[in-house]
Length: 390
Ligand code: VNL
Image (cartoon, rainbow, N blue to C red; front, side, top):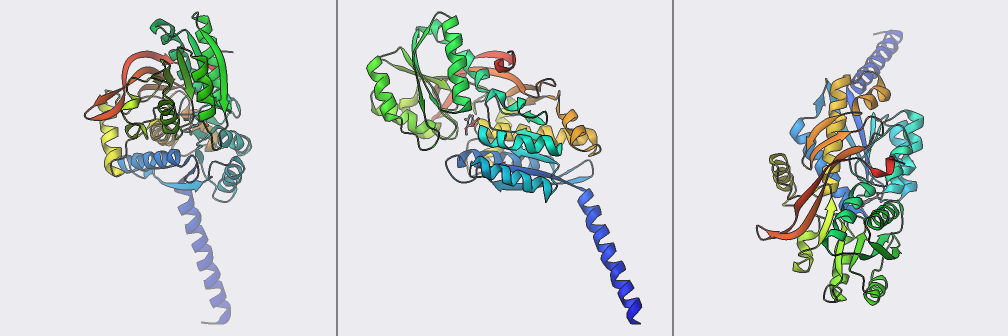
């Protein structure tokens, strides 16, 4: 071969190679999954990653002729890291969807990137009401704290609880829980006599609990993020709060299915309100819990897992509907208004707010099959985020 011809041939081969890569790229649908895989919120990352992989194992990794590629990044739950990772995923990896977000500051830090790049941001964990207002590209499959707190403030006064002290983690979801619980309790004739806030990083509950013990309310209402519940429960019992006649009531983040079984019998009888329990009595949930546990060495799925599993479903269904045509805008439009049966019960992605509408359950910690579970005893159907009504 002459030199010239050789060069031409290699250029042609290179072009062909590039074309093949471009074509392969076209046939790949990328989900950038940003989660706290290490650090204080690592259990949330582990639950959501496991649920996303389960969804893919059950539903295949090819949708509408495209190969689904999950790109997992660990943001260690630091919002500056989340922002940098989201930027890289959009600019370098050209992801079609951003998903995950273990805590509110991470979801918020990504919102401007979602807006500027017109990339849907599927929030699977974070639960401050205002998150969905931070970008028109945000869709949420977790829950909101106002959504679950109000039900408990309706239940409490009917069950002899009139005077309550609130104890929440001092950031978005905690402030939402405190505000909506308090307003509704007062509306129902009850009273919040003190409102205490603990820091998100390395919280020490002991001094706060001592203060509560001294003021002797009928109950202590608690919100702490997933992963911190066991420490609250331990210190509540160690201080003999229950023996002093103070009841513990909480959002389901405290009696988290990820930790509940290790909390011991001291947790028995604790009443919480939430959108998901691993003991939810439906065929769909039974199937989900069994498959999740089997794929993860007996791990019990918690509400974070369900947010991740349903988030993958919302993405898959949107891709099915659009066939991948029309980019982020079309995908977002196809996410809005989805209705389906989740392991938690029936859910609906409200097209106006892009937030999830779902049942909220009252539950009590009980023994079931020799283990501790949040057993549902009442339901408030199709609850919208009350934070959106204002
Ligand atoms: C948030 C809300 C995080 C509820 C949580 O666990 C939780 C949040 C990590 O919005 O930051 O249980």
